[in-house]
Length: 145
Ligand code: DQA
Image 1 (cartoon, helix red, strand yellow):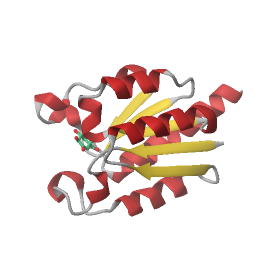
Image 2 (spheres, helix red, strand yellow; image 1 turned 135 degrees about the vertical axis):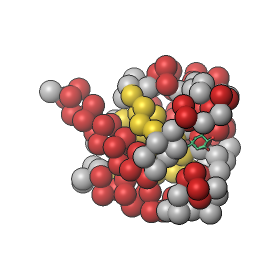
Image 3 (cartoon, rainbow, N blue to C red; image 1 turned 180 degrees about the vertical axis):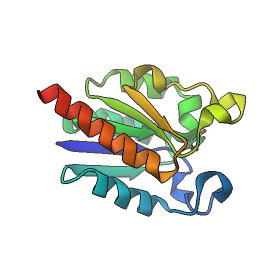
Image 4 (cartoon, rainbow, N blue to C red; image 1 turned 90 degrees about the vertical axis):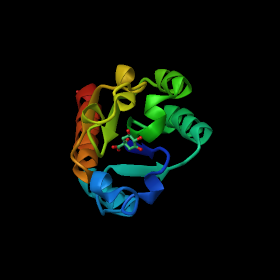
């Protein structure tokens, strides 16, 4: 099975961007963590700063993925188009954040992704991704049994 792990805007700067909030580990570190957590399943791990590209990748996942982990970053708080794209998926979706948006500014409390996610993992830094990958693979397995 193929797991898509998609990352939204500014996450390319992980490790140097607001390290007090997001930590010192880079997105490459997070990718390695996801690959280890996937335990043999193949992982397609990508990041983009462009809303339309994120949506194109979600469309691609319709054909190719058995589950999706997504850190929508800022677009999660703003993008109806992202929600609409996610609504076209039938595979399990796990929303993932490094920080805990619910404990931050009010404008981060709304998520356009959460209504279509099987679950949300937030607040554990890169470990959020590890948990999200494990949860996504579990959901895929449950569907098969
Ligand atoms: C984030 C939280 C969002 O509020 C923020 O816009 C991000 C990163 C996180 O992983 O903690 O860019 O998704």
